[in-house]
Image 1: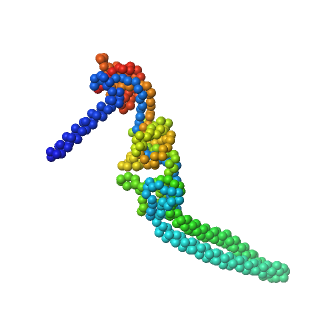
Image 2: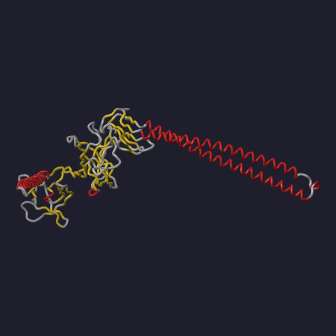
Image 3: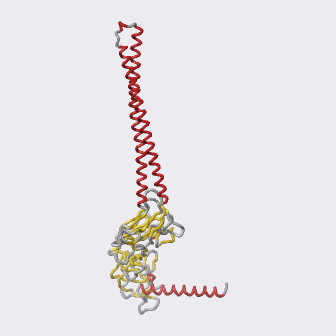
Length: 409
């Protein structure tokens, strides 16, 4: 290994050791300090202690106005304002490429003309066939009338064979008339159904044309209200994570391409990892700290913790593949500096002891599940009752008094 590489490696190791020592020193100082005793022990003090769990989230508006793609077919975004731009009500914010939609409208107009022509042809055909059926019935009626005149001649005036033939002919003509009438009635029923189908097809073609023409008027979207324009996420995520919609992207009909949030009421949306599930619950109080304004603290509470973990990506987990439970946090007040999408550090206060006996966590040793401490100046280990432990401190209920000194490992 070159000498310069060895030198850089040695410097890095020394820096990491120094950082670890500094962190350990800070941890001990936070946990109560060593007081005026030796570096190997710490004093039992009484002070306020909080069990705080840290979450990372982002601001989100409770209410927002959505802008959706026109109905009808997939459309490509031709132009849109930049994400995060302040827009005024009625200002044009998105335009879609209407070339494909115009072609679609022409195709639908052609379908309307075809459906109209088919309906008219069907009406003419049915009218002619109806007239033919009517003529057939009238001709059958005439034949029945003629056969009835012959059949009504008294039997005594004709030969027996002629009289029977006339009777048979009359019955045949009556049957033929009944058949013609049944054919006419059946044709009337079927023609009405066929004509209704043709009319429905024409109506559907006209509705499709009207919908396409309305979509053409919606290819330019205006802001429904004044506020911050937030572009929607592209439906197809890449390996680098989600990204915002941009000109050239194709979206589905009614796809939410953007939103204008209502800044009057904000909330925090965070994700709880699977390994930490159960460590926070609805109703717990929180302190929300904006990354861009760390000096401001906003009180709130956890409203909801999802019961189903979902895999996804967000602006504060851009690497993707993170699995966690969604957490929704309400805020007691909304500040004008809050903007949707800002990162937030959430301190969940799981428990609080206003005046508790506190020892450093490192001073408590667990033997067979029982907490023990080694008191300075005394031989052996003393059992204690521990209410809870934070990553830094332990809250002692019994076994120690304020001012006692315990040995650190």
